[in-house]
Image 1: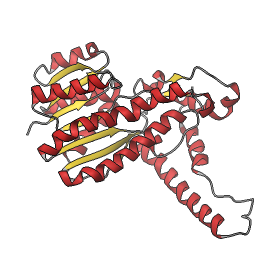
Image 2 (image 1 turned 180 degrees about the horizontal axis):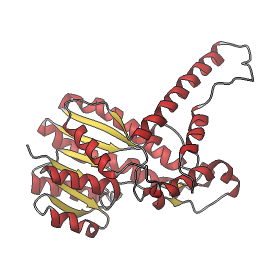
Image 3 (image 1 turned 120 degrees about the horizontal axis):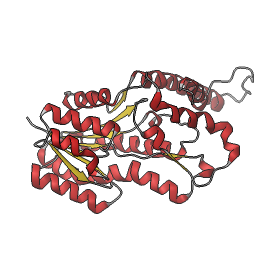
Image 4 (image 1 turned 180 degrees about the vertical axis):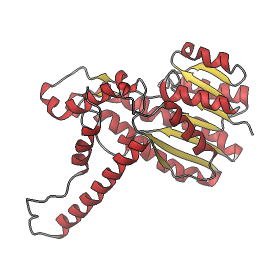
Length: 299
């Protein structure tokens, strides 16, 4: 059966690799980007399978038009992949209200909007998939990426709630959590207008690691990500949240272990009025994340 895909954020990186992989399988894909001219070669390679469409996911009317096009030309949508994203670097104190709203509009509001638009179609079909492209930071926090972390945590919460809401209709929902992949995200992250030098001590290492990711020869390839998403959509069952990349599992195993230790320490703190010894505190999740950042390539 030929599936009908709607994928956002396809101009480069993970979205572009996925659109090409989908077309290669014989499925139909509406590949969207703010500048669809970047997809010209994909359309030329797969003229009967790839439709390039302009889409700013923050524009509600354009989102409605994209779904309407899928209905008019393909008869519906079988798979929605909310991949479009953006990144903002800055500590909480540095992020303005306007910058925060803009980040959450892309990372959380837009996937919510597009999901809401395709759900009536999928309920009528009695089947469908929604794949939200999250991040490892959907399960942890990194200093300097406060707004991005907030958006990805919200996206994962929405994904988990939505998966339970639509399961009775035969609709499956997943959040995929890529580790480090060779995309332009690491160099395209914008910085807050307000920069406070004092925060370099806590955010500088993360910033340097982000800038160096693209040149790391050991980093994951977008084609690997695409293959995992195709397998996820084809599988009869799969977890709601799926980390992708060997580094993803290394990070998250450390984070999960730290979370268990933090929970045990919190339980002991609440139920034991005696002061805890000062020489062996349980590591917090934030401390584990900070330690893990040392594994990132240096600029």
